[in-house]
Length: 308
Image (cartoon, rainbow, N blue to C red; front, top):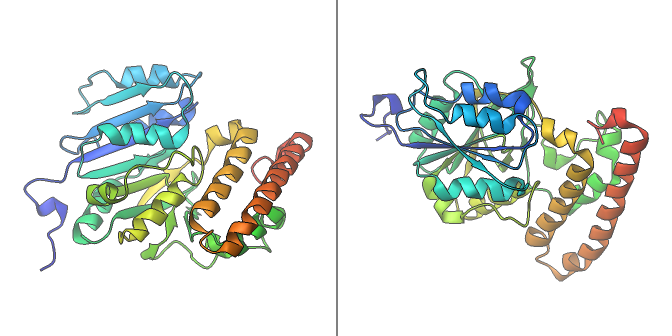
């Protein structure tokens, strides 16, 4: 018998929202305004990684009760930047919801997006995670789903060709064959907005903090699928994504952390054979060289920071 949609149930599942902020004052207000405040018993936790802009002031204001929303946020102020994975885990530790909504501070939930995602999890009880379609500020579909990278993808990425020739070199792991308009089971959707079932989270545990800034979501999705919790992309649920503001503000750091995350993912999940294990030191050295080259190019050609 097909489960009833959430709107037909006497009680909805409880929902916990987790947002990690860092220098997010430019986008955070709209993110908070668009949260599903109509959801009964909504729990919202915002973890700030020692922002030095107006983010802490915004959080303090939103932590106060207001007549136009039934709930309020619980802010956590880190005294230093603990990076993304550790901050998410701080939120997961105190989350109590049956469903956990992971939302970026540069994401604006469009009307009924969360209801649609929650309905989807309820009517697909075997699914562990569901992701919405991401839209740019001008309404264009933003590619957000990928496959797990293999060794061929790794070597192609560090060659730099996909960034230098984006219209001609399209890595297989970035799913250039997927137009993001159809419902599908996917391997790894972007963590800008994910709705996670509590049972799936309990099966795999929190994020691996060896991936401090990048590839923590890739590793998480890999473990979810290994634990037999499928991940689905549901384009009828839509959100607006103002991509990567805080990342581009610290581009050198993000380049290094991205390469570091790539290395740890390949080490953890792609070195099952002795041959691949032997490749790893060489891969690590080339990643370091590639990161230095990207950073040098960034210094010389700063206008290319969104591509390098």
